[in-house]
Length: 446
View 1 (cartoon, rainbow, N blue to C red):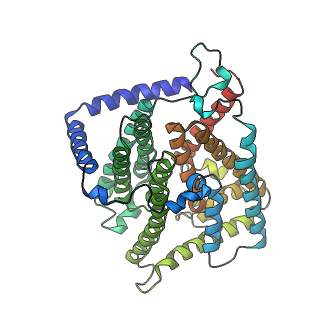
View 2 (cartoon, rainbow, N blue to C red):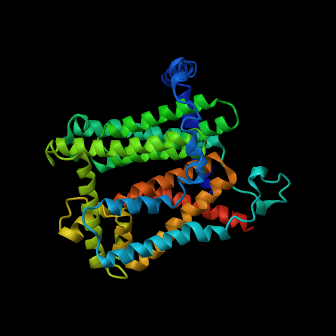
View 3 (tube, rainbow, N blue to C red):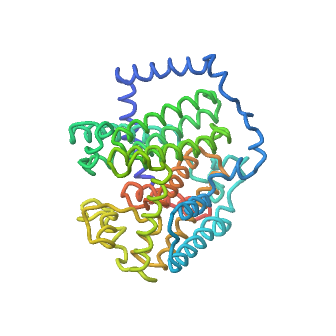
């Protein structure tokens, strides 16, 4: 990992330095700096509710500290089940119960047996310079290196946004039909802007924690990053990535103490309204519904359809699955059918359509109920370890890493964790967490 990380930070660092020193980016950052100063010193900013607005919300320990614990995945999944019009079958209920129990064990119980040799959070996890305290130190990443990686990922996303627009000859946000002509080879890299702005936020969070910038400055920069991400993916008329951006930045702001509890709650409510609104407007544009349809019904119908898909997959997969890893492998570039196209072929013999199978879909199809038990336990364990790390260290990078993984786990409740870049994020997260666990156990890592 050291070699790969060193190479990545070297190239990204040099690219970031060259670009930031260029005339174009110098002008951009000066303009943003001017707007930031005006924002921080603005009279109207004083009209915005302060930290103690709706202070009664802070009395709840869950709202103050535990909103985004790993168990929120189960809460969201439960709400998704409740949203559907039709009830699930008894066999699927058994599968869901297995999933919930496995996830709970992985996220809540198993992490108790790991990372118990580390120092208390007051010791800041700084490794002993004499090298005598190897077992009680954690891997820490420099926020500037993380910033340069995030900066490059964001630029790649924006570059491929323009390539995507050029490939279809217009803006999908202005003409919905163009969205179906987008090429995955161009659109997939656009979504790198999501972890990109998250990693940039890591540096701003570190600056805020070390008192190099004020809370108002940090909040403004978070707002700018969120706007950049949303404009980028909204241009292609995608809805799920917008949810991912909002959710990720809210989680980072929540654990980084950039956002107040009331802002998190109101932000979540606004996010739900945005989901309903965007889905409703897109359905109207595509003539999928009439104008007199209840906007909330579009969300219900989508949940109902997706759970019906899961029910069909559960019926044909049994206890041990039918594809035995082929679905997850189909996420790799060059596969004739993507995982969601494979779902369409399995349930309707139509490989030209993409169908979302929920978080459990791939697990069921590949390895059945056994796969659900193992993979949900593994997912829960990753999030549980990540959550324990941010509670112990308060480190900016671990906050961002956990936020990215939790975001895609929540979004994956409907869509599944099937995109190659998202699987890569989880692979990186698993590798980092495993390395931290091994080092905590005193095992030498080369």
